[in-house]
Image 1 (spheres, rainbow, N blue to C red):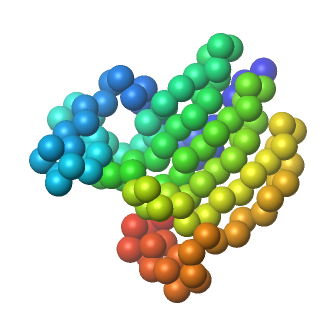
Image 2 (image 1 turned 90 degrees about the vertical axis):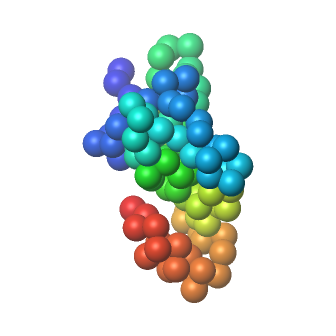
Length: 122
């Protein structure tokens, strides 16, 4: 069985392979990869079978985008759209990939649209 990752076209890098240079960014986490602001998914943890367990999306070094949690069978468990530490949308799935909790913005529709436009979220 093969794991199908959300936005599989985006780069994935293990957390240990990224450099956190938060000191130069006001104490906020800011990640670089090979000396450049990181854009892609930081893989935070793996299941024993090697499938990704949890990953966070970064754009230009900042935690902006999707946080994805996966079941051990490789199916998506939940996806939360984040801007920094602020969750703005969340979708949950069962272990067969069926949506159990449809998308529901966690902020006002105006704020949601602002975030999507400002950070070019997809």
